[in-house]
Image (cartoon, rainbow, N blue to C red; front, side, top):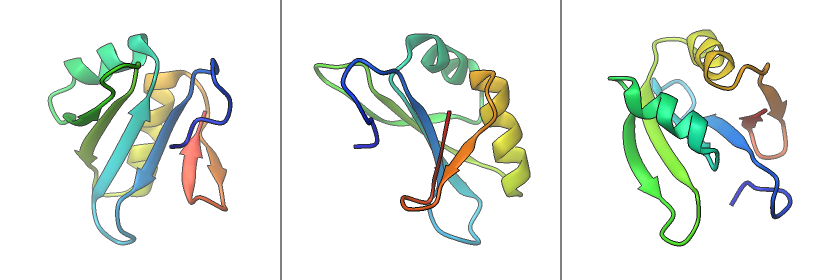
Length: 89
């Protein structure tokens, strides 16, 4: 869905609906999946059957908290893709 090139690892985050506290985190990296799996608030809501793909849903009161969490998980500053309204690493 959001992956640009085959073989390129990517983690993305987006707000499900503007003004609502629900966010989705999508990754194809096992290490980041393991980090999200260990967090209590993260709920696995989608996964790839024949590929490395995990989608988690989580609630945050403010977007800046979601961005800080993204940075803590990936170690990278989130970059906004304005066309897709998605933050990527």
